[in-house]
Amino acid sequence: MKKTIITLSTFLLLFTGLVQAHGPTRQKVIVKQEIAAPPQAVWDRVKNFHDMSWHPAVVKTEGEGGNTIGSTRLLTLGNGGQILEKLEKYNDEKHSFFYRIESVDVKVLPVTNYSSWFSIKATENGGSLVTWKGAFYRGYPNNNPPPELNDQAAKDAVKGVYEGGLANLKKILE
Amino acid sequence: MKAASPISRRYSNKVYASVLSMQTAIVSDRHRITPSVAGLFALFACIFLAPCTVAAPFAFVTNQGDDTVSVIDLSTLRTTATVSVGAKPAGIAVSSDGKRIYVTNPESRDVYLIDGTEFKIRSHAPVGAGPLGIALSPDDSRVYVADWYDDLVYVLDAESLATLAAIPVGDSPSGLEVSPDGARLYVADRDDNKISVVDTAQRRVIRRIAVGERPFGIRLGRDGKRLYVANVASNNLSVVDLDRLEVIATIPVGSTPYGIAVTADNGRVFVTNQHDNTLSVIDPVTLREIRRLPIGEFPEGIIADPTDKRVYVANWFDNELVVLDSETLKIIKQIATGESPRAFGVFVAGGS
Image (cartoon, rainbow over all chains, first blue to last red; front, side, top):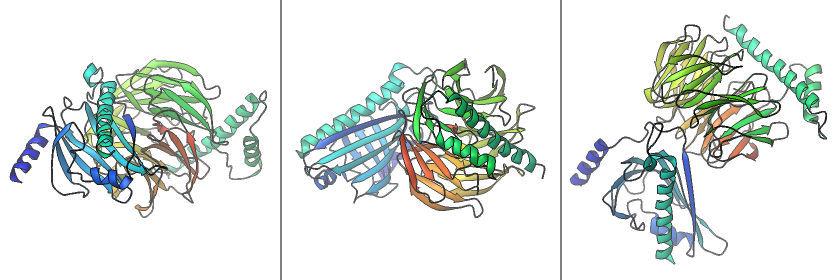
């Protein structure tokens, strides 16, 4: 517990905050994935904000506070990179949640001011349609971004996270 | 009393301008098969009835994702043209007669001038490092452009687009508004949490007012005596008294407020809450939120029609312009736009 707090505060000191300077153009990414499992089954697998083990890139999820608004989670990725996220909205009935990235090194994920929605809807054949959407700015807040921190790099990275996660979720549940 | 006359002049100018543009539109439409019946009706109504109620003819929506501007006819509620502009258009300003439309393109670092009758590019000019917020002087002779990167507001000649001056302001200037008499320019300095008050004759900041966190969209109240400021990071609206130049109220709204509209008839304030997908409705008298209604995903630019009881909202994630009845708060129509509409500014002639 104490260790977690120390880790989190160190993390917060190292990286910039939630709302920061950003480029002029917000980007969006939407990835949809049909899964041949009932919405409740899909929701049961993802609904714990502090368990992101269904995503192949995430090796550890730390945090407290459960699925309550304001709860944070620290994700550790396979490459050692970390992302601190905060739960903003949560709807158990509608199978959806909304969260923001509180802090991340742009070397880990080349975005700033990132917010994301995750939702599950029933399909006609009894399966699920999972939608994962993000709104964010590129990693480099000023003009003339280096290629690894430009708009396209940001979009590609987020798309990769969503596609990788949803493909794995499908694999787990089908 | 001093402030009252320029305001009434401003509004009567708007109505007069609307009539003029309506006449022009009818004349230029002569060769088309479908003349604007609604326009003709409105013109007759304007001649014989008082007060004059001519609908604003077009909305101009910047589509940041596909480098275009959607031109939406507000009498038919259909898209009549799509104009290609510079890279990643965001800010928009429309002259009071609706004939000149100015667009900021932060990525190509220029301002485009669109002809409001033919919907073609008239000219463009490079402006700064990241032009974003934009506003016209009430006499439509000057264009003010906020430079997001260089922390300046440029003053452009509205006809030639020549840069006449650059006024240093605070960090990451975004929303701009000009007082009804043209003497003051208000600038939201997003990353300074302040509003800069610029004397437009001296072309310098004369006061800085602390507001909430990350102010972005701003709009003048109906009588020009108030400035409403949407604070993106503190989820509230600052109300600035423009005589005293101080914050008189801070009103909690939804998550990540972005744009503000003020209705012409009763000064009701509408705020788009990006992360809530809602619209906050605020009573200007009690300064309280009276309603919060779902509007669509990631609402951004918003404006109230100068005469009709309508509010238009650009939903960035949904790629649509929502037409809302500002009294019943019912959605009248959702009109498809281009990719990622921003509509940041006064995107309807005479709108507020």
